[in-house]
Length: 330
Figure 1 (cartoon, rainbow, N blue to C red):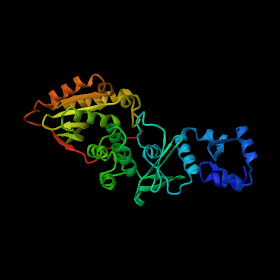
Figure 2: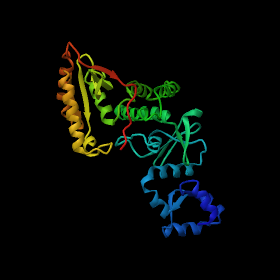
Figure 3: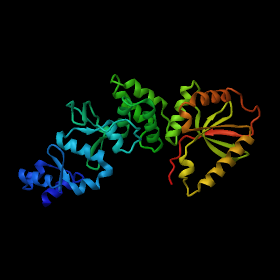
């Protein structure tokens, strides 16, 4: 590759345009020949990369598609947004939410092959530069997605971003204020109202939403239970009046334990902790992924029955909700 073309490609993940190739002295016939032999790959009209580079970027294919679209459109103010920005910002994107490249441009609305560009204003603080991309900020991305995504998927993404400290409820509210009256604004507002950065996993978020959907109040999250000055445990969910703990049991807790523990060690610690809670008169309800299907009506009804029964009159423990969740790592 000519050094002039390599410099252009290196700024853009290895992608380059027909104009870049012409500036480096490549003619139309030579470009066609390079594509015919597989040394170059045409990504979009007038946008190329090398076959070797495309193989190296296989795990980042949506980013490649976004960048190729931006180069093809040649709109300096166009910004990757919505689900595309969520993917590139490593926010949780649920299944079935599509791979269409999404863009926002203050001055133009346009759709084409596998892309959709929305015309909408972008405040200065709502645009960030990430590698070769202009992206909507985390807060703007979450609100844009929440106007279109199913409620559960939107709250899962918001909870994860809040937990990781990548945005705040105040930032989400400020973006929402600027989108008053936009299509889907009420959906986004509901998602923000339900978001809670203390949820430490998507399972906890989904479980909380199912509980609220069953007519129960949202449980307090990440609550420290202490007895005689000793920490008995930090529980996922807590109904104080009934002294009921809700634990959201993800399989990964046992199949991929953190802090270098074995699965057997995790199981033993969970049993010991639950025994200690029950000895204090606290009841424990465990909810797993499998309970969110056909079993949920029965699970929800049983939880409502337990929560509707008062807890012990004399308490030998205290319950204190934490102000933030703990982001777990291996």
